Length: 160
Image 1 (cartoon, rainbow, N blue to C red):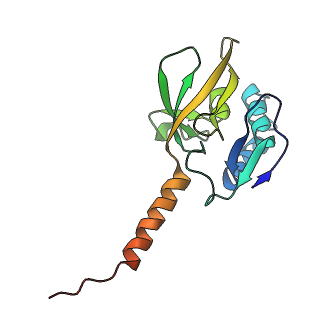
Image 2 (image 1 turned 120 degrees about the vertical axis):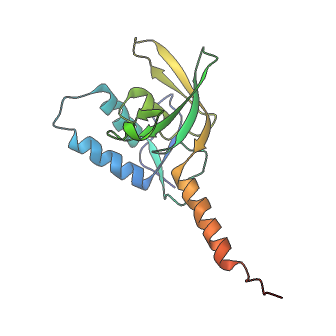
């Protein structure tokens, strides 16, 4: 594990895959000439304070890109579910939330049980807590690979 930068005061540590980091860093570079969006600044802050890990080593309870996450906004009893996506992927998931939204960038890199302060669209300060990472692509890939290896390593049954 490598810390890319020191965590910002009051914010929880976040973990990110090297691939997600590279893709998001590249995305922000391509958007640099466009209007400056608050969400871009929030995402840039998250990238700067992230701990980077190889995709094969990232824990299954970390919200990575294309993870399906259940979270709660403090003060509400309602748990919400969303899939964290890159811009242009919203049509692929019924519950998509772009990483370029303040909520999406806030969820990125959090581990189950972690909370982060967030500014709501109306300007109110709220806390978001990740309850569960319901699906993480990296963990699913590791699971699929283990299943394939198990099939290959299984001894052939001899017919009687």
